Length: 204
Image (cartoon, rainbow, N blue to C red; front, top):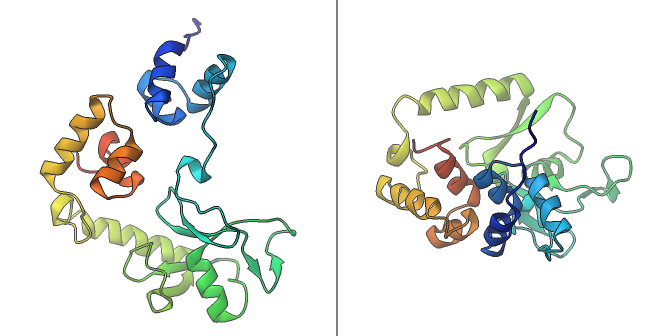
């Protein structure tokens, strides 16, 4: 088996253009970890890491931040003054925090917090309900199935992009001059949305 060598010069150029190591890896056909090691070996000054690789977190403890998964999280969450898992610090989804404060107890095993309107950023208690894991999976599956019947692209009720904008985004990204984060900022959408567009997971 022939071992492929990382084109370090190309990797450095892309990294200095503000692409993340994972985006550089995707463009060159290597893992983000491999790119990171190659840059470190060549004494490249690495940018400080952000939660989940994206600059959505606030620095102050206890504050909320938007994760790369599109959900809101609460940093260093404590329930009744104690960390939930063996005394370890851990971020928790804001929806879970809201529900546990409403219940006055931890969410029992085998249950999930469900967003009634399917908007995972809407953590208002009136939009949340506690349901079993199996019911949650069923609801999510049915929701995706219903969307597939004719509510894709611009027809989706929550669509923030148009077909014309999507074509423009793909063209700009393929030019190599724009990172996913820069495009997200430019078009006022989440980085995850841009990722889905350029990888073909949505807006095919």
